Image (cartoon, rainbow, N blue to C red; front, side, top):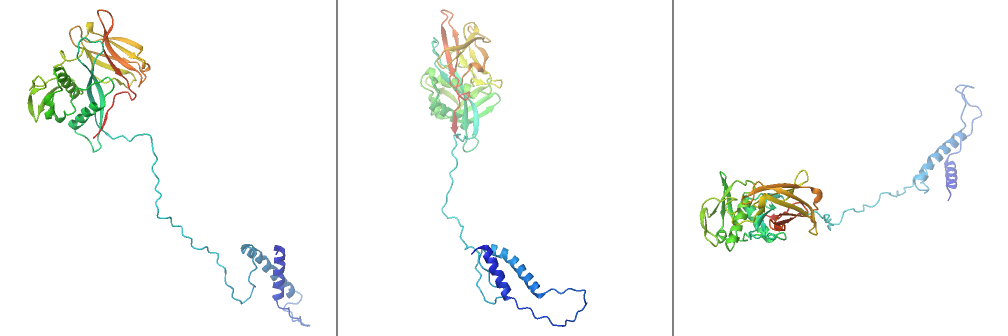
Length: 366
């Protein structure tokens, strides 16, 4: 049924339900003669019907076009509820846990101790036969909190024994550990375990082991000395030769006869200004040390001469800075050597690769 027809039928039904107007009397008493016009009943009913019709339009629109219940009807009709059934929106109890996003960045253990441990390297074309000391940066992570210096140092020693950079060696046996560390004035008292007494097997290995420990323990204070004890007792017989260590020893104690003529004293690290610092000690002809930068193929890309503070029979210190534009981390190497006074060949060469990340780092989970 069309909208217009519904309106028309509704108006017809309203008019049909209205009572007939009463007949007018022949003589009507006027309250105010000729001053008030009487509205004809028929017109009044027509106007009422029109008003009802107008009101019915929005009612039809609201009800979607259904015919409404007759006005004035006393018939009871059930009103259709427009309330939707209570559909449950409860989420299933089955968990849909979202896995955390995987990242490529490893979550690092907080660093509990950072220091320097000395390794050694066999120099190339050397007639001395002694190993050269080369320091590496060490970071010890503490999963269970801050580590004591002795625990951290022992962890660092065991780590470098397991994972050495190519070309480097360690003469400190894995069984050797530090029981405790304390400082008395300018002396570091290092109480070692029983395994320390056996040394490293042979005189040169024993001396190299001692030099590694001495230099590592004094990395923050090069002028300090070290007193080795076992169970807090002085060491009367160490290593294969039964060396007495009842008195403190320092960096000079086993240097002349048991170290190479060129040794590095600091890790080759990048400074705040970007340059790479190369520091060491040397006992070379005319105190002249040569430092070269090599590319990944071993080709020399830069070379410079440095004069140590002493030479030709005495130990001197040397230091120089390398332009960062010459270094490609992960590919470049630093070679420290001297030229032979006899034939001008490269001798006593110590080569340290520059890894990505600037310095060698070993992280130990404490």
